[in-house]
Image (cartoon, rainbow, N blue to C red):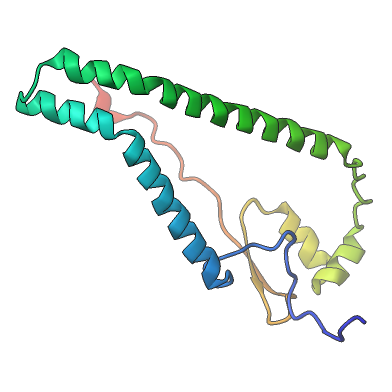
Length: 167
């Protein structure tokens, strides 16, 4: 059953999810996942932090702690390699999905009269508005054009000589 709802404004597709329209659980999920990711990064870098701290405070000799660091380095390389593979697989799947879609043909352009009728303004006003470089458009409550204002784009004439750079 299709609800009887009259659209009050043109809704873009895909819909934009703004801060005012997304559920609270999305914010909580994002914060928890971000904090979890930072905890994992700090845990993975703890050997590096300890080695740098010992080096700065001269508590131990350099080779001992840096040998430990080089023992932990393969885990970082493995983690980065897994991320690169996941990114490549995701890109390949997304490319197949996008290429699998049918190409949508552009619709036939509207004529001046039909476009003016849909916009709710006169054909002459629309023709004049098309000639302007900069145009401010005010919309009414139901999405129809309420006012058109052209902005002058004339640039002031350049001076004959630039006197500030004379030698």
